[in-house]
Image 1 (tube, helix red, strand yellow):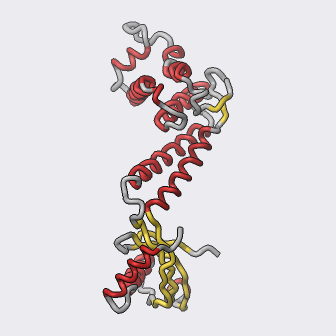
Image 2 (spheres, rainbow, N blue to C red; image 1 turned 120 degrees about the vertical axis):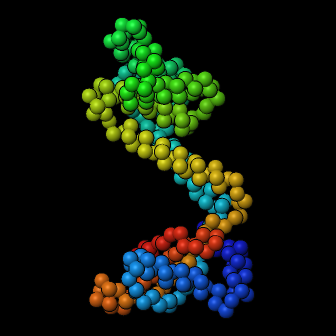
Image 3 (cartoon, rainbow, N blue to C red; image 1 turned 135 degrees about the vertical axis):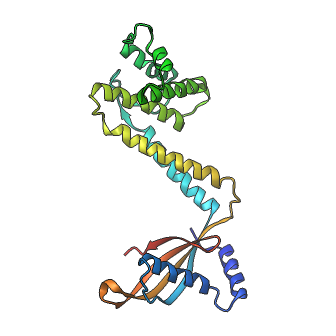
Length: 260
């Protein structure tokens, strides 16, 4: 990120609005310091306040896209095996997760279960769907099968990295491993699951930001040097430097400690 003309122009506008363009922001920092101290008066005194950076939509998008691509690549590069066939491969790439392989995973429970204990049914999946509300497991299983069938219908339109496809396949990978390991499956499945949840959140942010003007300001960053009387140090005077992040309406949304 870099300080831009837009930030400069915005601050110039504030300058013409009042004698001290930063006074409101300094007052907000003073209040924030007090709130951080659980309401204890810290006798905040401003020493120096300066704007150091600004972040625009296009810059944030570039950062999020880079993060998304890197983390997704880490998932696609995972080489492991599933205990139904023990064939090592990049489990989340479509070169391994072909339509036939995806169908095989979809039908694993049927072949593993055999004929249900209830003789009224000769197919476990029919039994499951007819009794889907009988247990949390049957409900989850039926939802999974329905999602898989929907993905299979659209499989030919997918490319490597489709998060829904990866997440759906992951459910079967973990289920098969749980079965063969007496519910002591490998950590890899939970780790990938956590990554997928994060990636979906990042994707939502990317989609949301993509609808905004590229030059729209997301936040401003200021460096504030101030003194307080720290009650944890028996009221001793302490000088602190800290970054404060303000949104486009100049409300504090984040604080950052200065790295030594």
